[in-house]
Amino acid sequence: MFNSFFFGTLTLKPLIFYVMKKSLFLLIALFITVIVSAQGVDFSGNWKLDSSKSKLNQQFSMAPKEIIVTQKGNDLNVERHSRFQDQDFTINDKFTLDGKECINPAWQNTQKKSIVILSEDKKSLKITTKFPMNDGGEMTINEVFKMDGNSLVIESSASSSFGDVAETMVFDKQ
Image (tube, rainbow, N blue to C red):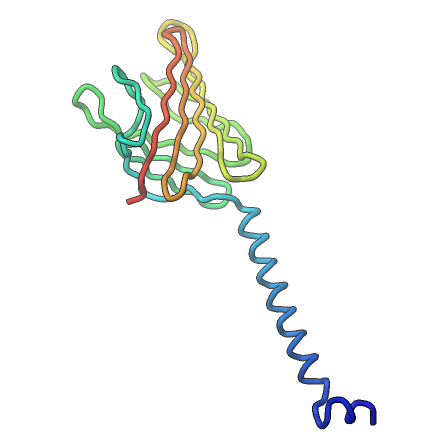
């Protein structure tokens, strides 16, 4: 009697169903958001260097003209297309995102050893690479990959017995 007095012939079943349906939808949306944010940023794509936005060394730049990144699960592949002394060359590196050491070919039949570390917020990653130099020393290259809007930014620094260099490379997606 009380229900029919206040609600007339309206029953509570459709209202309860409506609220449950909306709650389930919100719960699913929240779950998807958490999953996507847990995976972090995906740097995959074909990227072209934007020299006007980059901070490159005047005399010698390590910046590739184009970079192709493939990121799938725990695997990160980076293909760099560069030009040095009027010669085009490509460097292909394969990394894992689990912090384990990865070995790739370097100059003159040597190997470079790299470790990739994702930032805590999963918005950037750092690749630290070391390889032997002809003088018996070692070169260390640190690269931080991050997104700035729709641009891929790579902050790169290198240190060896020849000195230290640093560059900020900005790439536009193609």
